Length: 194
View 1 (spheres, rainbow, N blue to C red):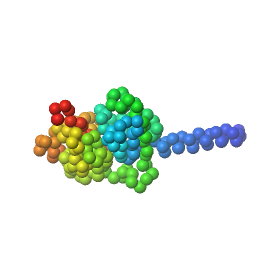
View 2: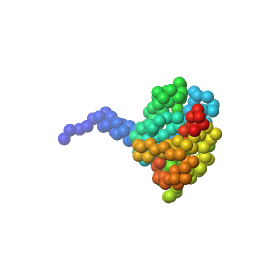
View 3: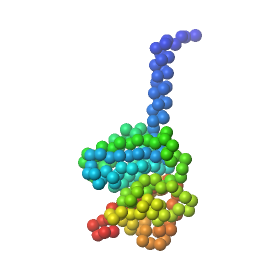
View 4: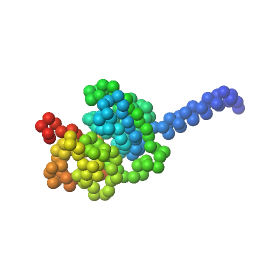
């Protein structure tokens, strides 16, 4: 029987601990994240800074960005760098500095609660408690409604990597049922005010 040296055993145990720590620090679906931005004008900071929930498809949907950013399975620092790059590549901000803090171990984590995320030009962007039978209009209203710059004519609903656009002036669209994990974005009005 071969004897394992103390050094080999210590190295093996250390690598196992580091692997487990890395796994514990990765972001999961349904996890609430506190995201803050610096390096942009003050008004823009309040627009982006807030709490966001990682969707059931592992993506994070942020204001002013088309589509989602893969969050599930990544570390907070890796996600921060990706968000910064996304804002730069979209030519929204030239030098954003993003901080992502996970609420994984805090009691306010929404992992076990059902939510939809409403972002963009609403008065209170972030997670909204989901109730069975909730409509698109009710979710936007629960987030405080649109701001003066928000367009309810082009409301974006992201579900399972697909994007749908609805006009909340239409009764049929107001009554559209939404589901747990949906992400809703109220875009900025265009130059015509739509």
